[in-house]
Each structure stands twice: as C-alpha cells, then as structure tokens.
Image (cartoon, rainbow, N blue to C red):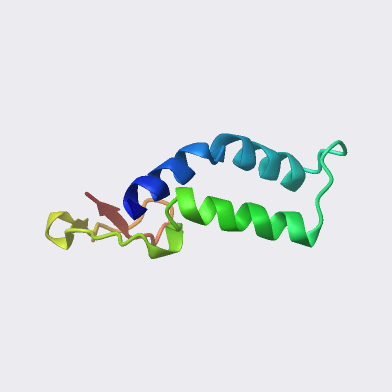
Length: 86
C-alpha cells in the first residue's frame, strides 16, 4: 500500500511546472515572485520526483584513450602544444 501511495503522490506533483517556474525566477522574470518558503517547498517536491545530479555516478573506461604527441619541431617556433586524441 505504501509504494502505491508514493507512486500516486509522484504522479500528482507537476514537476515540469515547478521546473519552469524556477527557471523563470532564475532568469529574472518580473512576473514570478518567490520567497524562501516557496523555494523550499519546490525543492522538497522536486526531490521526490527528480534524481539529485550530485549523486549520479559517472564512470569512464580509460582503456580507450590514446595520447598522440607530436615531436616534430614547430613551424613557427611558438607552437608547443600537446594534442590528445580519442
């Protein structure tokens, strides 16, 4: 019963509308007024529907990276860059 209730609550939260309102506020839309209480309420509702990006784990397979180092002398004498290619 609890899981069904949680799903129903998530479905009722209008995530898109909350995000659009926050975006308008952040971009300085003069028609959108917010106070600390409203911002906290929106944050709490979004926490229930959107993943927190700070908790997303990103893994990279480093075996696929190749570094190419050009050891030829520079043409103009100023180019001392090292290029990396994948």
